Image (tube, rainbow, N blue to C red; front, side, top):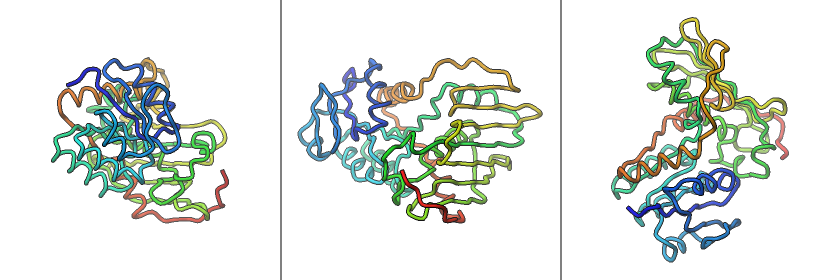
Length: 308
């Protein structure tokens, strides 16, 4: 294996600039060698506007796929066919069928596939999982409320089919949920609030059943202009565990637990390097399945048009 591992970022948008590029620069196991984007460029490396041209003419490199999910299937399959190890930003694909196809292709080709869930690498998630292990869980409540205009300005693709709407951030909560409570998880009811000029929801309320019948309630809202809230509260045997700020903070019975600094994307790239070294893959689809189930059984309610 070449070291440091050459990697190309595909899709130079907000998430790539804010998270992927800094994480790659800070990781000694990787070296950025190219960027592919129709609209953005990265200084100091070859830039391509066409993915096919990159695969044919660019450097041999692993691929970090940071495009919107609706266009990932074709790129992922081409990268795999070219023998490239592949990291995919969450959510890994627009549908369960697509990610299953990608997983099968990677397995056949023998390349590393890492379908990332960055919130699982938040510093409080592993300690929360360890504390909950072996305990009887009574209930889980998820409150995930943020302002889409603040975090996703001008990103119209999120309101189109395959764009996920409020589940683009909401799936982060579901990725933490399925990490700290491993086992069967099912959506039992869902209400999806869809703006009259959009194809995807701006708000959602889900009821789920977790392992051993644990009741889980989740409220997602992308219109929230006040205090931004990303909380998961777990009641267990008379105690309460609370993950706050998307998994950055942990309290148990109101007492803060020291979990260390933020490390989501640095953790992702450490994991990718380990998977490449082991010639292994990691592509859990449990969070995406919960989103798909919510869309399948959810009752849609039309709400006011969204204006960005």
